[in-house]
Amino acid sequence: MNRKKRILFIVNPISGGKRKKNFEKRALEDLDLAIYDAQFTFTEYPGHARQLGEQAVTDGVDVVVAVGGDGTINEIASALNGTDTVLGIVPEGSGNGLALYLGIPLNERAAVRRLNRFEDMTIDSGTINGLSFFNVAGIGFDASVSDRFANDNIRGPMGYLKAVLSEISTYKPKRYVLDIDGKLFEREAFLISVANSPQYGNNAYVAPQASVTDGILDVCIVHRFPLYTIPMMIFHLFNKTADQSEYVEIIPGKQIRIEREAADAVHVDGEPKEMDTVLSIAVNPGTLRILC
Ligand SMILES: Nc1ncnc2c1ncn2[C@@H]1O[C@H](COP(=O)(O)OP(=O)(O)OP(=O)(O)O)[C@@H](O)[C@H]1O
Image (cartoon, rainbow, N blue to C red; front, side, top):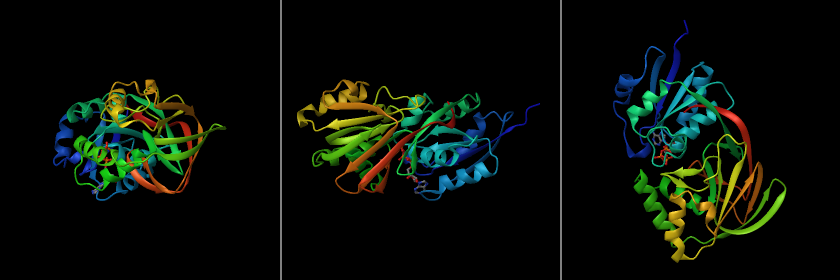
């Protein structure tokens, strides 16, 4: 008989603006305890999920479930990346980009029941100046929005809407020099996103053709656009047609170097990080096992 799999749920008590009290009790109603031995823990501070994930790998836990958004997933996936430990997701974030792309239900009970299938796939990851990302990393307007969102007290999709509206009228495009697999591009850009998976979250598709299993990152450059085109830009974003906009250029690549005018914020799966002028980005094919 197969031994039961050890599964650890790491719950972020602030993601998505939901406290997740009694998560353990609810999850145990839906988890198949014939296949899983379950444990639960809550994060207490930023960075804690990564530490708990590293400990779980050391302890030989089979599945570590991120109960949170893309930031929580990033921390745990960074700990599991390159190991045999499998990531599970119960989406409880504000954007839930990776979960939406993988078709993981946003309903908590349905997401827990999905874990019982134990169907896994192996996905690519990216690195940006040594930090791993699994969904999307970006600079320019993107990073300013995630910085503002992180410092605000409203989470959930409304928090993102507020951050976008506060930034959009004042944000000025900046100049960048990009080297994508040896080809040079000089661009003035509103934002540059480097996408492993196609959407930021909330079904906003920045790079509709991106795939987490193709060994390639999609570099999405959004050029300066007139303010009157904003409704059209938003339409493209939510209609999976960003690649058809005249203001958007998408270049696939594996090794990417971006030089900026100054050190500034970068977002890594939606979490703002301060980084140097030069950004070195690469794809790492097939590094993370994930339940889908
Ligand atoms: N106990 C805690 N107190 C404060 N912050 C925490 C705690 N635990 C984790 N965090 C931080 O919470 C932040 C937000 O988490 P997460 O990204 O999962 O949710 P979200 O931003 O609401 O959703 P999404 O990323 O899907 O938009 C992360 O930066 C994480 O490090």
